[in-house]
Image (tube, rainbow over all chains, first blue to last red; front, top):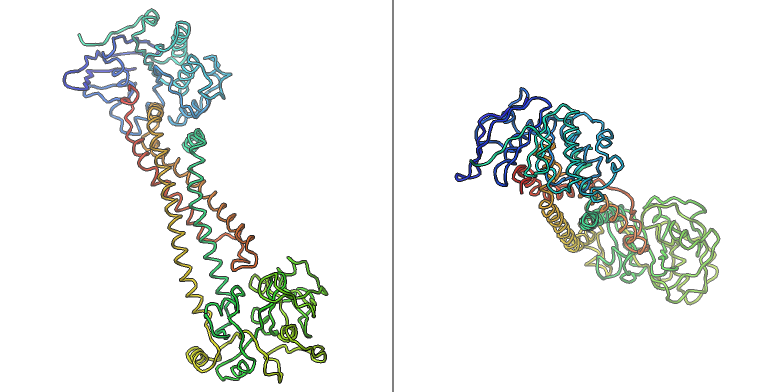
Length: 209
Length: 407
């Protein structure tokens, strides 16, 4: 389902990343480990269609990501890839519900069961709240809801637990795994957080060797 | 959810900033609106007022003053001319019609004009009630005069000397209202009209009671043997185009009267006003430019905070073009609202101006008529919005997602 092949990327000539090939089938999970600066976020961005590699290709289903041009890639990403960041990065002028509706609109996807997702993540009562009224843990769950709202085939999470306490971190990991399973989607988590390690069987480590 | 709503949400997220920018631009646009309304209505009102009057003849003095005082009733009359000279002029073969006027009195600030029925025909005035004057001291009121002073048919009042209130009253003879005119939208609305004879008799030292009972003349000049009588001005219509060349020259050089052409004097007046209008216009444009700059700076600064938001939108599927449009739309919405506020504010300013100046030159300008040129205000405003937002929008367009998100 998701395949990367011979990916090379460098920010400058001294610093080139060794990136292993990734091959994942529907519903599979992958944990990418590595210390800071090892290129794990870079890999995630490349898989997510945000950063074009210098060579190699990324294929999702039958689509080769970097053969898509401009707005086509944007729409493909919006529809098929859900991204979660270390910080929630929810748009402050909009309410929780409007943030999810925007994700729907920008991807050009059909409106999905927003209440259902919010209920699954236990934040339905925050539906019409502004972001400033949410706690850190709630905000992170909203960002997960936003990543799920277009029913993506791939969920990418970059350090999703880094700013959370133990209880919330545990909860977020369980939610991600549970929701990915529900959508039968691929889940790729990038982290250096030791708390996350035990939850994933399939792990790779990136970095200079 | 759509891009329009998104832009709107970002605008109302900073209400103070947005309000300030709207007010600033609206202020500049309101001044332009006021100028447009005034220019449009003032010029057409003035031009309409002078229709049918080819030449004004009065005492020697400023020709502009002569036209303003006898056609528009806004400046002081230049003085009087003798009835004998006036009659001589009406016999000139170049004169088709002449309407005499005796000015100089007022009632509660509304000018009393001694004239004949031709003056009403000149403006095609219609009576709404009563009849025209036939005897001395009978008056017909303009619509506004009757309304403002709450006068009815049969009401009596004494005129005062001078053209402004609070000068001494002619208390020997009261005027009697015999007719009230329909609203005409021109200068007649603010006048008290009566016969020339009324004006003479109210100024006369000795009173000849027999003549005060006699009918007054309704057209032309009164026939009288009294050589001392005077009138203030005469409005003249030419018999043929040749008169336009010969008559003013004849009057100005051969008589001790002065002739002024309303059309010519109006042009001169508009030219004089033009300097002031240009200055105010310049000021308004300066305000608009500053408002545009303010909108630009607000958007440009907000881009720094919003780069992350924009990058997130890209990950959600927004294209570069959509983000560009999103920012430009913010500028357009802001300036469109400003235009609405500005135009309303402009009309409101005119409304206040007119109601503060009910008997002056701009009386009768209607504050709430909308003119086609006002559509340009929206066009200007939206233009300002597009120009102010194009650089921030370009920044939004270029925002790299990955580099922004990993910062």
